[in-house]
Image 1 (cartoon, helix red, strand yellow):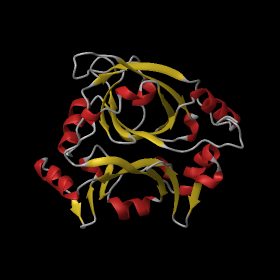
Image 2: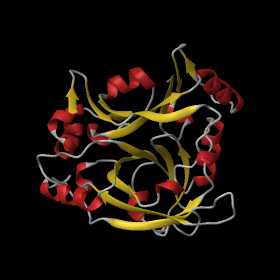
Image 3: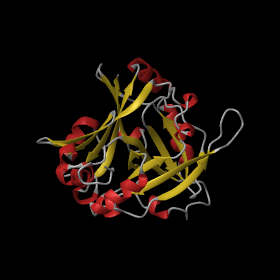
Image 4: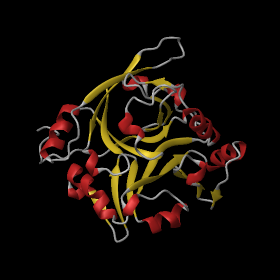
Length: 286
């Protein structure tokens, strides 16, 4: 039985979260270092985009943008709003994923393969290679959702990049705000099976490996995170990330050193979206 068959839904697991920083790669990297993240050296995709990663245990965060002269590449990406715009799932069977998406009538373009040279400490620069399988763009307002098949995972999850001054071990929450959380979550029910969605009165929850994808109302988003971006006409907008840290004191120290304001209520530390490229951040201890 393959992943693609209706009787065997795909298993949701967060691979990474993408923050669109457009032409602001330098400022974005500086700000996330101030937030206490250890970032990889700048990488350059064969498609023309560039990035920095904050690599964790199971997943990672990607700051995605472009360098001067490359604004004409991947123009579909830069039309998205700045901030959190990519919800990315793991797969090791991209052909089966594409078949499943087609069966569910939620497929985007065909799987695409690309690479990025990775500068290692030994002076070599092997190519990290990926194959991505997108959901239909019309089903994911204000951003993208796709599967990422890592053909060379050993060039992404490396020990030298996984230790962060703020002690973060993984992304544990990905928050989407929408007037109707159930409508926003519907495509993921079609993708992973309706049983994957835990529908509550004010929110919908989808477990995705160590992470939880939460769909909440704008009012709930404001109550939890303060001022966050909103989608036009109540459309879904990716607005926040939650992290597990080995030490909240390490988070507090990093933010003080970085001169970043934060809200502290003993069991968690919050950073406003305005101080994190439009993405609200919440840190809790493991």
